[in-house]
Image (tube, rainbow, N blue to C red; front, top):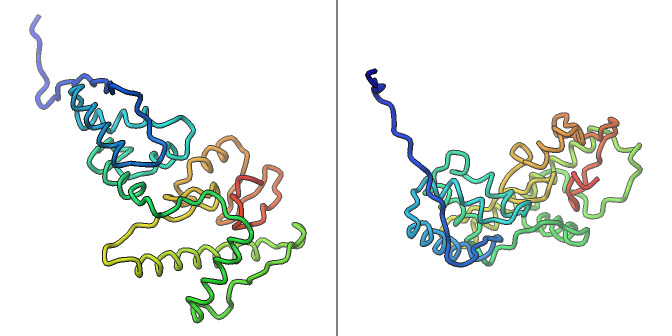
Length: 228
């Protein structure tokens, strides 16, 4: 029997397991030190660029915020290590920039007041400083959608103004996801949202989110939407 090789077929390359000497885990801090140790261990193991991009998630605790964020970064899906490494350094390489997970009522009010002072002519109707609590039945879908859009635009514009005044070098500030309150992605790329929708825990209609019963979830910037 004659073995016929298909023209243009690529040889299969066996993946090399990366074996660090010490326990190596990444929790979202000291990203430069982690990448140096990870690449050193990969070099000792003879791992390729693809191996590093493929196995990086094994060195991040399961169900951690860092793991969820990593899955949204550039280069993760394509297993492109140079791009993924650059995205990790861009996101976690800012030790002085806090990663806000939740915002309480006082912090939200202070943020709105600062935005009104910095941008007095941004819109004809400023975002209200003190929003009285209203019963769920009295809030219409249109009011919730309008409030959501106005507050989201103000927060994004505030971060853009702060970024322009920090230094001459551009600093990438990821957007905030209002469904899970993680940074680095919007609701369109939110993995918890996609998972909850697949499990029929929440329904989405445009910018509005509904419970399985069809009840509208009121928008409150002080907490993630998924917490209702």
